[in-house]
Image (cartoon, rainbow, N blue to C red):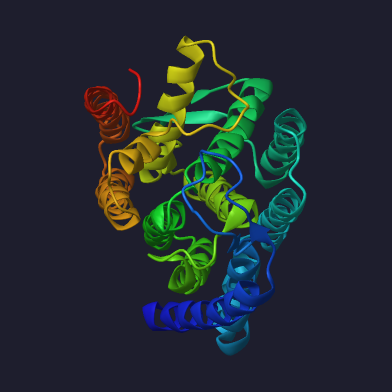
Length: 352
């Protein structure tokens, strides 16, 4: 199984590298026209198109070269898997439009909200929370639908918000997808694992051009695409395997924590939650003198630790593992955020 997935990942990475090479030469440019941007020269963007090409090549190659994987796909639910890929490409298209002709924040919010609800409804609403010993808390369908759509919307936008430093968001998402894919394989959803690892291979191909020099950016196209793959595949795994809904937030916690704590910080200061800004923790770290390399590695290490916690919680017979783990991570994130902001204030590069 792992050899077959390795071949699919290699194909995805190779196609992604080649597709991204074309984008480096012909892709739309991201101009450093606002202060919040970290680059100084116009840089090719929409590397997400290369990631999507690599993902599709790797996943289809797996099905074509190894027929047993095709049988597995149909045994699970080919329609829902097709819906995951379809909505990921819809978000890719929306992101590419925004890369080429920026959409106003409010219109983007409305479009993403509608798309998140549609995707959540089609892939599957999560309206029960396992309590252990075979018990579960059942939520009204409307509450479950809102919560599920909120998960899709939040993770996709968190990846997008965090995509402002070479390698940070894409590398972090690849680590989260690796953990999610490993969990899927352990819990009996191999085709979900195939989706995750095909995406990981494609992201690795993109990182060849993006990290650490930033010769190509993922753009909104890339951030929305990989965010959708992560959010929707996790929904499918939850519904198919009875995975605790708390596990995916653990796997992607560093991205979610930075994005959500920054929004909370801005809300307390009555600042717009829709307008772009440069107040995320990773952006403060940049202004404090941290390189793209150091920032990315810091988040990658945090993602790997969260992936290990999430993997252990997913396989643990103790139902309390996930909520306790998530609570500990949340407390740690609040402490880290305060330390970073206080340090920045002392350096005169941010306010607390």
